[in-house]
Image (cartoon, rainbow, N blue to C red):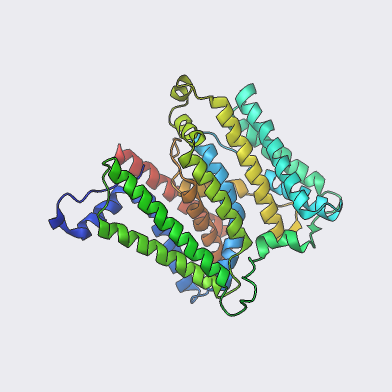
Amino acid sequence: MEKTIQNKNSKEGIGKEVIGLIKANIRDYMMYIALVVIMLFFSWKTNGGFLQARNLSNLINQAGYVAVLAIGMTLILIIKHIDLSVGYVAGFCGAVAAILITQKGVNEWVAIVLVLALGLLIGLYQGLLVTRVGVPAFVTTLAGMFIFRGLLNLTLQKTGTIIIPNEGFNALSNGFIPDLPGLGGDIHILTLLIGIAAVVLMIVSRVRDRQNKIKYNFAVTSTPVFVFGLVFVSVVIMSVIWVLSSYSGLPWTAVIVAVVLLVYNHMLNRTRLGRYIYGIGGNDQAAELSGIDVKKVTLFAFCSMSVLAALAGILYTARLQSATPTAGNGFELDAIASSYIGGTAVSGGIGKVTNAIIGALIIMSLTNGMNLMGVDVSYQYIVKGIIFIIAVAFDVRTRTKGR
């Protein structure tokens, strides 16, 4: 639960309250600060090119598959497991989608459903090994990494890279939502309307949460600080929306990721299953003694992860408009890093899917920005590794001090 600072003495002023609020929630704020700093740095080094509408749209499309994987990985890490197979599960599922569409003549939407079902079967297989057979998740998914890497190579062994000419499928990671009929112009009106709706929903949600805290006598921030926070977030959202609306509008990738995020955020924060997941992550033995079916919840987490890996494979394949033998290489590392950078606790029991999205944006912003600067890929890995270890070390230290 987010900590808050109650302004007991009005003479201290709002300034001190803001400083105290930041100190109390430094773990939650640091990732946002890091993302802003990274974006401003690359904008400076690329003479504004990083924040141009075309590149922001490209960044969203690039980050889509990592964001989807990070959402699923957050659940796995919260319950103190890990899934190392997701990269090649994504690559293999993307290859299967390509074969179904190009060689079997299957409709692209039917192919997507079949591939997601394949992801579910993979999750059942690995989840049952962990929960019923008792094979550790690390071993199960490490074996899965080898298995699905081999299956990916076998699938594409005869054909090599498969080009996908299907426009509907490729639009998932390259297309944009259409504008309202009869409203052609320089500004994408539907994107603006979606942005306004998102801001309104965010404000309503925050106001309700604040009212509930007041109702049950929880400490809350002062009204000026609360309003400032709402205004700041609203300005950031609408600034991004305005830039996108001046280009081609909102990418379909953003819509897909937003839907997945809303579903999982609701599940974790508003349902019994979400409480079970956090409870198992906090203390699995106590959770089992309290009546929670730990094995079923763990099985759900692995099935969920593999379905999202299949979706990530679809997005990545659509992005490249082809299935390649190298697809999936390192995806699991980006997903794990995104979750930890987003504040998921190394010890389990703590994590937010919304923050995992920020972690994914940090990872992909680094990649995108360094590509624009022409940085060698070897140095890119070094930089991302340094950022990762700093984020985890910072999280560990701040949690230790908070005890």
